[in-house]
Length: 237
Ligand code: SF4
Image (tube, rainbow, N blue to C red; front, side):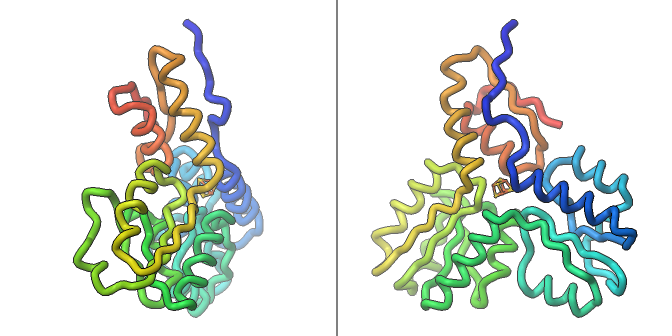
């Protein structure tokens, strides 16, 4: 059997960077807490926990401890709370996600309403909302656009979660356009995601079966699975 490995298979630079920051933190000799998993991959999260880094679900007294901010980022208020509790913050937020934070801060300061196309419960989306003062409207799908919430908005500033499906995002943006006097869309789907999505689109035509290896809790893995074809074999874990 011939196996064709996708040219861009493997971790993106943002995940590799977060892992290396986590490992470096674990070697400082200080207690390290991470709020949730550093990246959405069970194996990696397990390996990092083995180095002594503790996963927490809420902030503890942080004096003398490091708080590791995961690749998906975190909201400003949470970081302020962590500082108040005494944590030293080590930020492993992917630079591409930080760029989305910068864009939404900029949009809000110019009086635009922020709209995020993404999964409402995802850590990255929550971190993006956490960089707004007035909150954001999240649109998860074309079928679930919250039209009632949009009626009073004149100027919309739209970003996408970094791992969204470009085709889906384009359809949502097209549906939104006639609703606002002004709409600015920033294609914040990161380059590694775009490249992978393009490659995965082409592969089913050249292969009998597609196998997507990744974590079930990874938005990126799920998206690649959806794009390749819903009927393909997905090997997760
Ligand atoms: S934003 Fe893109 S490059 Fe950064 S961690 Fe997420 S998938 Fe990787």
